[in-house]
Structure formats: C-alpha cells, structure tokens
Length: 208
Image 1 (cartoon, rainbow, N blue to C red):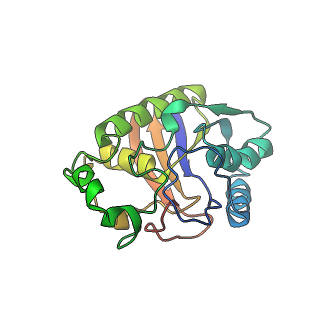
Image 2 (image 1 turned 135 degrees about the vertical axis):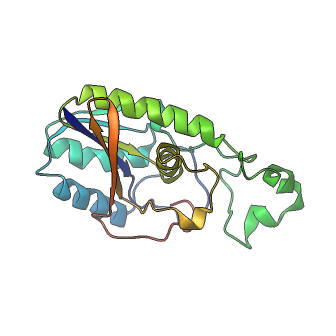
C-alpha cells in the first residue's frame, strides 16, 4: 500500500532585521509567504491529503493552515518538526556581517561536521524521521503533509539518501514552500521527489 509523506518548508517570513530567528516566537509569514502557502494549497488540492501536521512555530502553523482548510482537516503539531537549535539565534549571521565577525563567537565554529554551533545533525535526522513515521502511520494508504524548516528537511533527506549530514548550506535543495515528498510502499521508503510549487528561492537568504 502506497503512502506519501510530503515535507513542506514554510513560506517566506517577515524578518526586516534579517536575523537568524531560529526557534524565537513571533515570526510570522510575510505577505509573500502567505501567497506561497496558498499556492501550495492549490497545488495539493487534488491530492489525497489525510493528515496535516506542523512544527509548533508560527510560520509553520500559518503555512499549514490553508492546506488543512482545503482538505477540511485540523493542523496537528509535532515538536519534532521544529527548527534546529542554533547558538546564533537572534543575531545577524550573513557572510561578512554581524556575529560571524566577532572573535568571541569563533569557538562555536570549531566543528562544522557536528555542528558545534547548534543541534547535532544526527539528532535532527532522528527526530525528523520519528515525525515522518508517525505521519505515515496516521495517513496509511493516503498522503500526509508535514510542515517544517529548511535545515531539518534537508538533513533528513541527506540521512535517507545515505549522504554525509554535514554540507554546504549554499547548496541545499529546499526552497521556501518547497515539497520533499517521501513515497512509501508499506513501511519501506521507495522514492524521494522534490518539487517547487511556489518557485525557487535562494537557500542563502538569512533566516529564510
């Protein structure tokens, strides 16, 4: 029996100060982000969505809402879909800007393979996998939608593809409001399909 679990990255966030907002509360979708969420809802209108679950963060909940509404479903919450923990949260971290130029922060950069500045990649992959399998079971034989964040989605994809979890953030294939769809035959993962119903965006955009 085929089941599909769609991992949806949230839409664009209102972030005028261009900080790394991470798990900070109060960061909502921008007007563009709201349009992106509606675009994905339209793209999935004909799909057999039976379960919608999102990260507890506001931007993920807002992205999930129009999709759940279109299918007359509630938005469930799974803490395991939350953004990765990061010690630079609340700071500007664009290349050549802000916190990364301050020597007091350099010790946090000592091990990019872990990474030393935040939640370990392996921990992210394991919690995301748990959330995916719960969603797969809830939508058995149908489709589930999990709304999460760029780094957790990309880390899980690399884990499932048996690739090193450390990577160049500039090369992530996980645009705003993109779908990384996991196709299961029973409990076995048989395919990963990536799509961008709302168009491509730059993975380097701070806090996106």
